[in-house]
Length: 102
Image 1: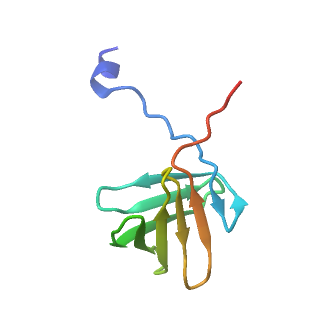
Image 2 (image 1 turned 135 degrees about the vertical axis):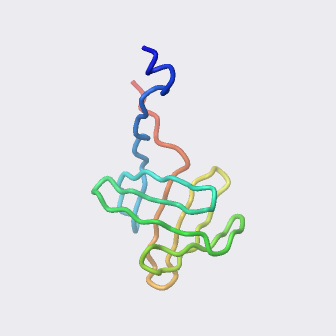
């Protein structure tokens, strides 16, 4: 019991979000670092890290792990769309996971 109090509760994985890659629905999880880095992990096991190049709001520029440039647009409700201008790929990441209702 003392170990639980000192160490805190065991961490749980964040729920999957209803993301999309090129309009194809695929669950993902995103995490954000204080330096503006974003990591997206897809349920199929793929992952990519995006490093902030130019901060802005609602538009920012990020570079992926392979060198590609992406424009991230944050919408009023907090959802984000990443667009690769070179090849047209688009990633949609909602602000929150969908809540399951009974």
